[in-house]
Image (cartoon, rainbow over all chains, first blue to last red; front, side, top):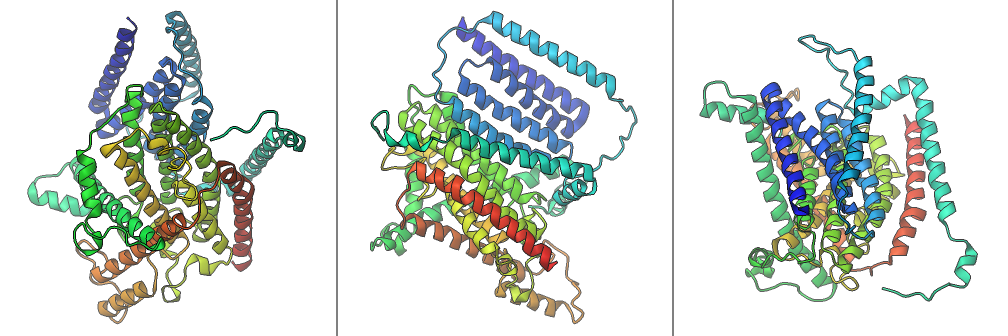
Length: 207
Length: 379
């Protein structure tokens, strides 16, 4: 029973990805195929993340999601954003999540389908709400040739853009300062006091 | 290879009708990937042999001497055949999917990172204008692969190795990135080819380290952080063969195990390339300068490039010299890493953390600040 559900979920996921790829290829050529692939990676990773019972596997599924989002950024011509996505989300945040989660034991209990349904309902509701908001605000252009997007892929252009609009540069610097302060404060709070070192509570066992 | 036009011409020779765009992309990709795979394999074999010879000579031994005749040059080849024939073991308790996926992810991401690597001026796999950023991002992916392998093995040693890798890489990615910011400020570009170009002049010695004195400490910081990033001794705690058996690769055998090895040597070479390009002149050296001068002298008194047809925009001599110079610099970096490995003992994990967070990161910040001031004052 449980095995069947597992297999079925991944089979459905694969079928959906294939269908998406076929749709992308037929409607948008190579670009459409790439978009469908990255979108499938993003959504599939997210679904596996909430479906898997093992927390670590869920965390590894996020790798696909982050990679897919980076790929979508690349398709939109935002190279810098894509690289930052990989460097920060995969290299930093995902490594930290894994570091925290890796020592958790596998959950042996059966998956509760009611809970999965609840999660799907909540996620679908949130998705629908955000989608409605976006649909209400975005003006969908039906023009045959879309206006050329400003290509800010070159790092220098992005930097100059930041400096030119002076309202951004202050906010940017402030955010950086706040992050640094938070980092130092975290280290200060987490630091063991000198008194802790004087009498160790337990003998140092060791590897 | 960037020369899509060349591939397009080749295809036009085969099929005189219009060649579809996707065919050009596909053939270019196949050629590029084949060259890259060959390069990494040969590089790994050579580096393993070099490591054995270097370690041997540092310890007053010879290292491999018999296989193949001259100084055991075929030792790695023989090892490669042995590894291919070995039984591929997957432990019963392992997470099979992740166990199989991990070496592929590690090797795949280092291949991806190497796509941004220039081989010679105008001769590269992909001209990414965020080159070094791309390399750092892809190297971060190998970390995830290592953590994956450690967890999927379901072994205490592997898990310890993976935990150490996670902690160590998160700590050292910061000084690695920040110490690279300093030459990036001088270069004004992320692109490796452009950065190398920015260092031409002064008879090939206008290296970034000579342009700005604060780049010398930045280079040292980069070297230390790169050692930690590539899991090389004295920071080889994820592997730590004397305490953790073989760390994250304890449960791996045969060709999967050798994937981790190939990644390690490819990463060393890649980090050395990045260091050579952003600190030590890239393609530039007196030899490159001479070759370029010879080329200009040939092309006419006014120095205008007349011969621009064919594969190369510049004559072959210049390209070969430039490529050799960069490869020599990178191999010297690899040699330095080996030298350090066989000289220094492994540090403890708390010492690794202390060094990364308390010394390297603040130092890197100071160096970046000083580099910025120097550039401001000079410009």
